[in-house]
Image (cartoon, rainbow, N blue to C red):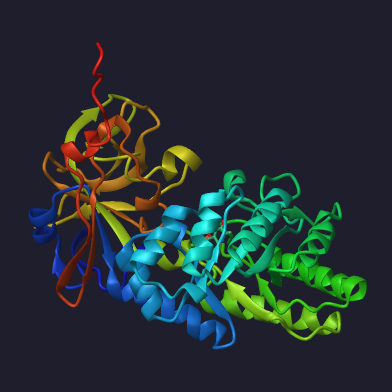
Length: 438
Ligand SMILES: Cc1ncc(COP(=O)(O)O)c(C=O)c1O
């Protein structure tokens, strides 16, 4: 069923998606145009709640803002009692605009600038996840100069390579992030933090990757990290109070994708942490997780309008839409596959035939989805919808070919909130300065 990859409020007429969150798609496109990102409020909030319920009150669930970082979404995450993972000054600034409680914010990044760290100090960010020795020095210097105490977690790469795309595997030794566990670098980092007065070591963090579909890599990472906790107790007599296992739960982009439910993932992680702590004779540290994709991804869809159609005899038929890699980079970046179907008003009994949906950018690799079944009478002006674009869609959007970035709307209970307005052509050139001297 196509319905499986769409938000629960999706309404279909035949093969066409006609409404989301109680709002008709033709009303949305009449008001906001296309391309358009549409977020389903019930699905988004439902996923935040499922995470909190599945992990229980003792676990901190931090929404990974990188998946979709706009003020309205961060306001919802704050209201749902989530923590927040931000990975840059820009994401932190968005959190500040959303009035996100700063004690629940964690600042990430493998190359945080002095300005970003100072901004975090001024805002009173709850935790900084330190990624390198140079960052430790920067942080210690800022702490001293500003008389600010930072709560610190160390980002550890435990040496676990999950089964996912190489660009989004992050827990192996040969990677740019964090302190490597196997080489003893993580132990050295602990010794360094303990030497600084105004850096308070709260715990350790690892994030092994994204779009992970099985629990064994998480369990392996948990075991390595808890063994590290145990070593630290023997070496320094310290007990780290917090263990952040990162994000990474995979989601279904296609109907055929078989994925873990949030509850199964939570049970596996909680089980691994409790049994690992018991094995090493440790008190169970406070667990944190940082889901991004599995909260925002399935809550979002993208609407495009069909433009030109090109039939290549003996090959495929291309449907070219009014967006593409500028609103969803993932197919070009990772070869990611998506579910696309017809949308909007009307009903068709037409035959379903394969089409390749392409964008309007000057790249052959600018494909929205290949070989998807669409009505054979598809015509210029028709609407198409791509499912599961809520995460890493808008957040990775660009102005490539100087396309204005689309609007983002939130729909629910028949209401629509505009979260991000569509850019205009003037917005696109607004930072350009003409040469004064020609
Ligand atoms: C440190 C960290 N935490 C959390 C996440 C979120 O991962 P996901 O969106 O797969 O849940 C990422 C994603 O890259 C990350 O780098």
